[in-house]
Image 1 (cartoon, rainbow, N blue to C red):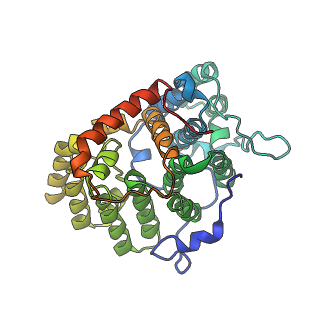
Image 2: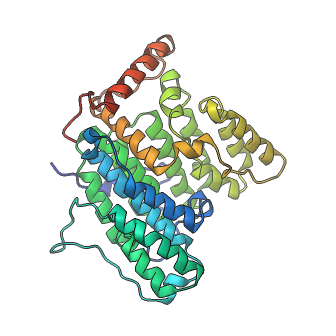
Image 3: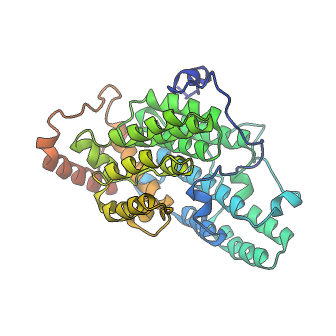
Length: 377
């Protein structure tokens, strides 16, 4: 059965109460990131390189046709295309007519990839950078079109309609993985009505600790958009609490990058105490980043802005190509676990850590070789 978003359920998902408050929304236009590190971190050249990596990504043969992998690739390519447009200098794209709309047959959505071919992208990308440097607007638009940027980043209604269709093609509990990523993208684009729907559907699929970590961060961003800072700080605290419940939670959260989107926004609102507590607790879960987190804590305590953009192992883990591979493997494991088998903290977790680590290592090795049993996805 195909997946349909139940938009009426959106009204009940957040403790903040989406039905009673006004949310500040941007005008309907091409995707535009609502703050956060995604725009500030990267130059246009870096964003072009990111999209190029996604376009050229080659997964192992047994994962290449996996629906989760295809959906994640489409989603991250869309995010990169949006970041490219957001990184364009000045008001370039507002001053000239640019193509828009998705290539559809008779108005029907399809699972056909909207990514350009690697050869087309490789030809157009240098021309875009050259056109920007020489302030040649028309050539820049032509290059962006050949790179697939306009097709990947149409007006929000088309963008989310396409991505929802892709997510809906994933069968069973594995749908949780691209659904969480879609919720994150919607929050970054300030599409808060969409976020509420995605959160509701994600919670219905029994998310584990790493998914809950991201879902609480997203819910907190929505609360902040409504001016509910107290609710946002509660979501921040909960986002790290779910990763500290036991060793299983620490392991599954710790092998994925921690989410900074809500912490950064709260810090901008002056919520230093909540962010400091969050970062200090993150040190016990993401031990590989403990030293860097300590430097952020010290900066905040001394009244300085933490350098969240400093190069780190977290950046490597958060690269789109890395995320696509890791999340696809995670979906394979989720697909084998029924929704009813929800994680119960502290039930023998501490005594079985070594066994859990060994099993995880075996499963990852089997998945990479295509020997782990998978579902119809």
